[in-house]
Image (cartoon, rainbow, N blue to C red; front, side, top):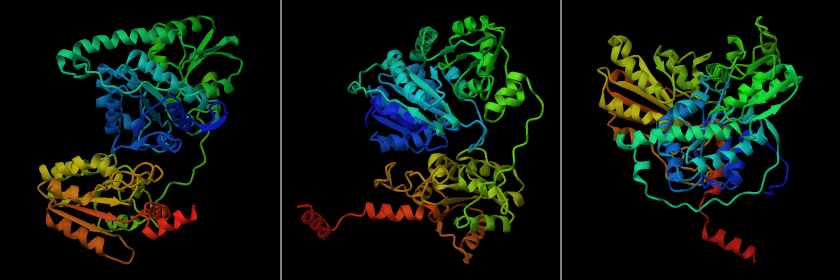
Length: 543
């Protein structure tokens, strides 16, 4: 790829290219909108990328690569960082030898998420520096800067992006790639083994490191000041800055790209130059709270603008202090299971049998909507099983026996296995039934691979995890595999038997996603071993 060529890239693609040009040797993550395309594009342009079973595993693998002096990238959506929080907080103490960048892709407005948490708070809580790009060029540039910061201070760096930055396409002018240092492990027990005796001084070192980075951020050219009218000053970051520039072009601007540690001296100096200073930010009042805590007088947005994505019209209302009711958006087409989805039959049976269904995260969550309305709970990945176990243990027996957990194949691998282990170990008095909907893919995020598909991120063959074998090894009493088919009552009969048995049971309802069928045929042909005759023919033709 010509580094001087101007490219039209999404923010996700720009991050991937920035990682490649930074010499990243390993990218690991778990697919989740709006982060998925980062690793897919990284692999497409020649990077070494993998889908891990979950975000915790992905980050731990990236930490290991960085411990060895390599440059590593870990990608996930905002709720994925919750799963990876355990290694994140400790990696801030240990530090890293090579560069480590963690991408958190937040989803304001919940386009495809169960909450709209603001992961800028994670940087403060964990004590890691954070950068926040507002378009694709910055996504590319900031990725490269993040590796420079990471290696200079031997720290993980959080690159926080949002849906609009991830999926919008803007021009990118790349720079020449760099050659990273050769990976090499250097033993440093007191830095890398976080027993209390070593963790206490590590925490002190971390805080001293953040003080140095704060001063670096005060002088960073990433924080952009644009002089306009002295009547109105706007402090902003991320995509909010882009909206604010269009909404109030006459204002003076301070664009904060180093979101943690904040350049508070620079902010204070800017605020003194304008009569009125307004902070425009998407999500929580993260900037406002930190700036006011430093004794700097600024205006924040009204609470009603905390929810959902910002846009130019909303920013105009914020600047004007308009708290009148916002125009009601026309209703969009609600999401729904595909007409030919094999799991429509499963939800029809759940509804018919009047079950209490604890659901999980995936396209099958759509079973909560009409015409099925067959899911009663949905919390987070893996909770379909464990919430069901909790209900089984407190409900009266007549209700407990109606509880069924439903989970998908990728979600089972992500965080459902431990729930099945708990079901076998801490057996509910009435038993329990888990239905695993195995459609051979991570469907909702765009049909990515996982350990149960038998293929890697780049679709090359890999060792396949067999779900039913895992369940048997965990000690589940009854493990069944069934293909849900229209016109057959096999699934319904089997479900009734399992519920009536009072035992622990797993039913693997296995049938490929209807959208995957064409891809599966192509992959089967691609990965099919060539016969001797085919090889001979190809050799003759190429002579």
